Amino acid sequence: MAHDHDHARGHTHDHHHHHVVNLEEMNGAFIVGIILNSLFVLIEVGVGVAIHSLSLLSDAGHNLADVGALALSLFAFKMMKVKSNERYTYGYRKTSVFVSLINSVILLVSIGAIVFEAIRHLFKPEPLPGLTISIVAGIGILVNGISAMLFMKGKDKDLNVKGAYLHLLSDAIVSLGLVVGGIVILYTGWYVLDSILSLIIAAIILINTWKLLRDSLRLSLDAVPTGISIDNIRNVALKIKGVKDLHHIHIWAISTTENALTAHLVLSEGTTIEQEQQVKHKLKHELEHNNIHHITLESEYDNMACAEENC
Image (cartoon, rainbow, N blue to C red; front, side, top):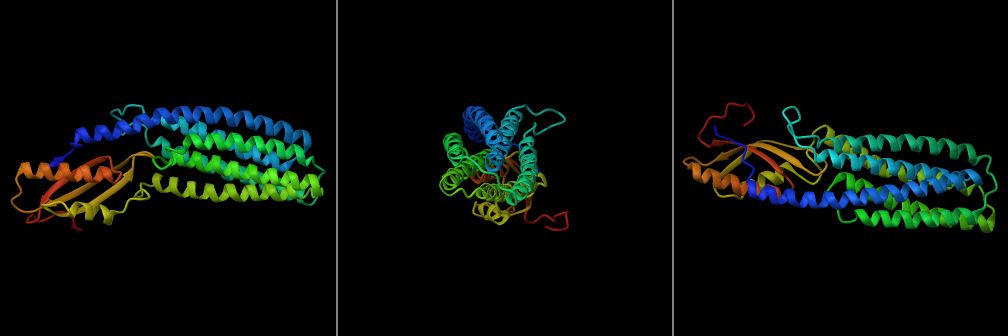
């Protein structure tokens, strides 16, 4: 059986080139996002402590978790560029998967803290300056809105970028809620609203985090990445002339942006070596358009008895 590790080189190179350009852009986006959000956290904490506003403090917690998430994602991007070596044959690309897993766990912990404080304050609301809350939250809409825009372009290409984008977008929405809350407090003196808002913030973080946790857990366990189906990949192969079957298909994520596949390719009897190479080249080209970048194929012929049980 011929083993084939050739990666349809020219084509793979092109695909990688696009990734690198995006990494550079994203690098800048992460750094700007981290700086803007860190400054905003300091403002929120300062004002929140000064006026005893729980919703501002819980939002600061939310934003601080985001700064952590952005910093971890930036670290993951750096790790993705590290060259592979004898021991880590895929380099450190998988770091990006673990980072999004760690991110989601950190966020879950911060939700617990917010909920605990909010429930405590529900029964003993303190008077608050609504206008101050609205002004600070207004700054939050700007900071998070600008930061989210930076990740708009790359959000469909990478799980960490998508995570960053969703975090920042939800932050902007939460800030909008706080602006409204502050105005209501200002005019009605309904101070308990502060605690209610921080519980709503916790619920929003929980919904986003749950999805992030689920996706990153899946990738850590080498599940087939979201958006790729084995049936679909088999159908792509079967459309190519000379391909009889594709089985023993394994697809997993090497990082949050790159996927790998190994499979047995069954060719029709009498296929020449040259035809085999052409079929493989074509199949790899098709697979790269289906978001699979590292492809290893083993060839068999349909008249051969397959040694492994589930052929």
